[in-house]
Image (cartoon, rainbow, N blue to C red; front, top):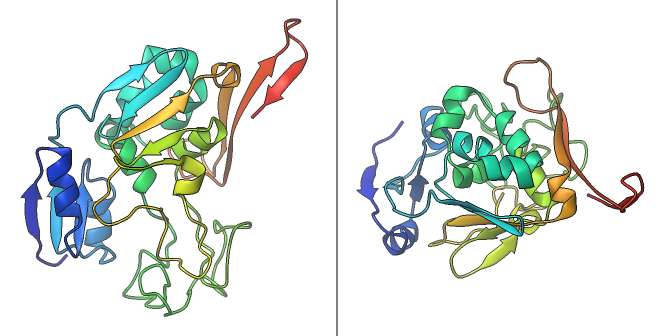
Amino acid sequence: MRDFSYLRADSVEAARNAAALPGAMLLAGGTTLIDLAKCGVAEPATVIDISHIEGLNAIDVTADRAVIGALAKMSHVADNAEVKSHFPAVSEALWQAASAQLRNMATIGGNLMQRTRCPYFRDPQNFPACNKREPGSGCSAIGGVTRGHAVLGTSEACIATYPGDLAIALVAFDAEVDLGERKLKVEDFFLAPGATAEREHDIRPGELITAIEIPGSAAARRSTYLKVRDRQSYEFAAASAAVGLELEGDGRTIRDIR
C-alpha cells in the first residue's frame, strides 16, 4: 500500500469537490477500498472520508417509494421493518450479501461501487495483464481458469463478473441511483465491459452516490431473492435472481412478473 493524502469531507459539496481531484477515491465503510489498496489494485493519491456526512444514512420507506441514503449500513437496511414489508427481495439480498461483520460496516453506496472479485484482477503481482487495471494490457482470465467468470455480457477485453447481490434486486424493481445532478436507472449505472473494461460504473469525476430510490409496486411487495453459491455460509453467488409477482384479484393469476 503506497502513501496517500487523507481528507475528511463533512458535506456532500465538499465530497464532490474533493472527488474531482486526480487520483481521489472515496472511503465510507472501507470494506472494499482497503482490500484493494492492500493487494495493490487501488493506489489512491487522496482518500476522501465521507463517512461523517450527515443525512446520507437515512432510510425513508413507504408503500410508494423507498429512499435509502448511500451511507446507510447494509445491516440496518436489511433489518428495517418497512423494507422487509414493502421490498422483501431487497432485504433478502442484503442478508445474503456478506458476513455479519461486513454488513455492519459496509454501506449501500459502497456495495454498488464494489469491484469484481476476479482473482486475476486482484493479483497484479502474478497477473499483470488486466484491462480493468491497465487498459490495453490484456485479460489474464481469458485462457485461464474461468470457473466463476461471466457466461453472458463479456467482451474480448474482459470476462469478469459483478459480485454484488443488492444490485440484482434493485434492477428488478426499477430502482434509480441519485448522483446529485443526475439520476440513473441502476441497470444503466452498471457498464458492460465492451472495449472499456476499466469503467464499471457510469459515474463521472466529482460525482458520488447520495441515495438509492426504489418505486413501490405490487411485484416488489411480493418478491424474493434467490442465490446459488458453493457453500451455505457467506459466499459470492454463482447465479442469483430477484423475482416479484403481481397477482390478479383471484390471488392465483399472474398479472405482472419481474
